[in-house]
Amino acid sequence: MTNSSVKGILIIFLASALLIALTMPTLGYASTENFTFLRTPPTYNTQTGAFTMSTQLTNDLNDFGRSGTCVMFDYFIFGATAGQTFQGQAQSQGKEVFYMILQSPNGLYRFENSNCGHGDWESVGGFASQITITWVAPENGPFVIIFLTHHFYSGTILFTLQAT
Image (cartoon, rainbow, N blue to C red):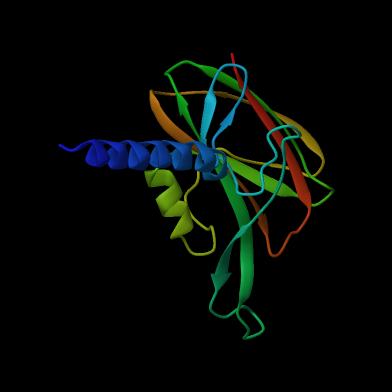
């Protein structure tokens, strides 16, 4: 190999490493004291815990013969160990918001491909102001906590989660 070939490879390697380092925060990773979210909503602020729901499920025709948003939602993916306890704080701005914790990616896939969020969901909780969520992981693996509300909602939700 010539000296210029080695320099070229080194430049490409360094540029790739820099690109990865610069894009990592935009991939939605967020760290808490003792675990890391594998995915956060695009609007999630790691310092305040605030986010707005950015994803919609729409129906083809509603009761009035029009299509529209039937569910607004967003989600966090995190890893858990069987028996590990998670405690979260969530707060909405007066509108009832629901949450559910499902296995990921299968549970998330089923939810995203459901009929406007209708399905046989276990452990769906709701809150209209502030709530403490305590959850124990039933097994090892990735899980998803989905926050959702019926129809359009542009309000801010605050959410923090800690593993104990």
